Length: 219
Length: 395
Image 1 (tube, rainbow over the protein chains, first blue to last red):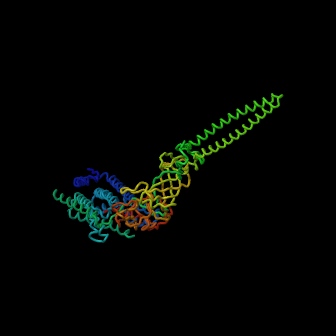
Image 2: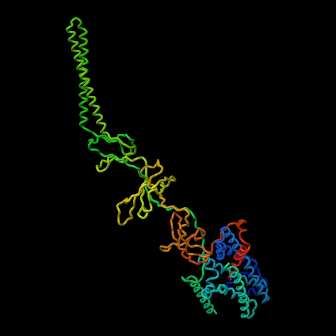
Image 3: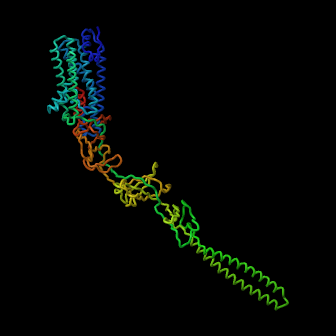
């Protein structure tokens, strides 16, 4: 039997989709789905870079640079952002697939297929956030769909805000989707799978927080 | 199972609502960004404060000719309204019946005398022929000659009388000429009025001035000697001038409801040839001029009640700064205090802008030159690139 990768279907009917995936001998259309998702991610990054979303740190240099220098810095940011839009999802896909491969020793293509709807969920989050960022000045760190909003009310430490930011409706959705998928595919106890998935997610969360919050704040 | 899901859903929705509230309520602690679409730097320029108002062309001077009863009754007005007159052009002729009668009488007398002289001349001829034909009789000849001489004398007497009358006639004609009033200046007959309270003839001088009016609150900005530019609506041509006079009495009678308007006069440096009098024009008066003034687009000023602010982008954050406004001219506004030349400000302030917000600006698509690339340190280049790269991580 053959399974056609379709992240949208996997999001809407995860149980049936993953049951089909389990029975499948071959998985098709993975590359196409990956390409489509990457393309969407790049377009979104382009849009964000164009409107300067996320350039709060860069704007601090506005007074220091000449207008040409600032335009160049913006261009650097934009090219970094677009490249990031391409590579970050790609890295996420492969690193998480590899980690799960180490834990569960499943077919790699199937693991990759599982990561695609997760990626789609994060893309949806970005798309939903985009207008809020542009028109209402909401920062990604304080997405109203996450616990990030609570940060400034609880503590002054920006690192903790960034960690809280990782707990969002979308991340809960993504994590639970992964648990459902891995459970369906591996038939291992749900507690163990949940623990692994959450740990992996937290690992990613810490990594991302370290990457985004550390090197640039206050520079 | 389904019920359990429904509760979860409800909790999530409530959480999101609470988050939105925490994010957007009045005293929210959450730092926010603001998208600044357009920013600008103040300019150091010369700014003028002007007053714009309307006016019309009017003759620079008016000469009035009044009815003079001593000269008699008006016989005829020799000019028409709108006619151009020169100095010396006759305007009015008065009539004097006595003189006319006298002239007529003299003319009659002259005619009579002429007739008499003619008669005498005939007589003389007659006597001379008679005397020359009567050659034999000396006494008769002497008699005729005597008669001819007598007639000759009489004729000379009459001729003298005619001369006298002619002199009288001349005198009277001169007197009559004095009854014609001539224009003393060149100009245009503006009005002919038979109303006794008004001048009979009004002559407008050909040179024009511009009369304008300005409302109270504006008129005090004007001063004699200020430069003014007069423009004919819908035409490129403009005339320079200066304010020559400012009226102290309102154009219309002052009323309690309306603001009073006061007249002022602009002396033109050059005479507009084509413009007729009473033509409506726009007047722009430069009331103040300041060089080296810090100016910003008027739109960039954010007003709250009586206070004025500008949003300065300082160190990547929004700073709401109180400023003192100076001269405003067109789209430009001078900032007297509170702003330096090199600071970026927000071009279009909005309600949601608050002090301390992080500013984000759209990408300025511009191809960097080699020099610009050199100017940035390698670390800066890497830093900005990585900053962009890592901003792609979203949870």
